Amino acid sequence: MPTMIRIDVQAQDFDLAAEYALIRDIADNPGAITIFSGLVRELQDVAAEGQSLTLEHYPGMTQKALRDIAEHACDRWPLSVCRVIHRVGTLQPGDQIVLVATASLHRDAAFDAARFIMDYLKTSAPFWKKQVAGDKDYWVESRTSDHQAAARWQDDNNS
Amino acid sequence: MYSIHYFASVREQLDCSEESIEATDAIATVADLVKLLAARGGAWTMLANRQQVLIAVNQAVSDHEQALTGNDEIAFFPPMTGG
Image 1 (spheres, chains in turn cyan, blue):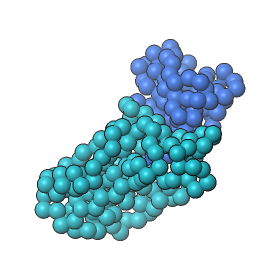
Image 2: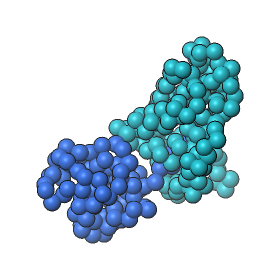
Image 3: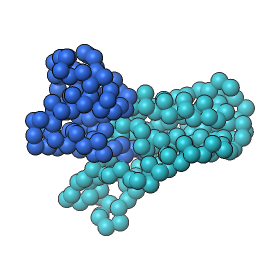
Image 4: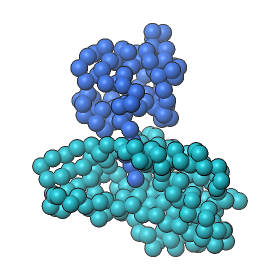
């Protein structure tokens, strides 16, 4: 099945309804569309107005890394559309940060592929988060659980 | 020339975002380049820490054994935290 892969790395926000409409329009007989959106979490112990999250990336590599992940998903599941949007720059609590959308004939492929893309995106695409919390700022550390989530797909040959 | 880029916490700790280094026979692999940079001392020694600092050659994640040729683009950065 030919797959439409579309990747954007951008500062501006995205519109979930518009993305859904576009995917529905271009997908080949979409029996299932999965859309995941990740949002900037609000820290509990700091006033919301004193918080921000800045995303740095490696411009030359980011598109390529995201496309590689999407292509791996397309090799593994029968997808007709694979869409990734990742924002960069400074975001506020509650802002949308990432979108992963997949379309397939059946739901299992759409669900699994979207999760696969997110799990790899977190550990293999060159983005880094810097958190501002009141008068402090720090780089967000990579989490072992994220690496375990990505590694799980290597052990799982049943999908 | 090797074009070298530093990102995120690595960039901040080195106070350097990019530089160029003459490609010579003495820098034939990533390991050679890391050795040369780490020899500057101070924060630069962290580049040799494989858990702390990842390396990309020509925009693909790579390792210390990777061979280098002139005009390669090499990047050093901490583990990724996107999404």
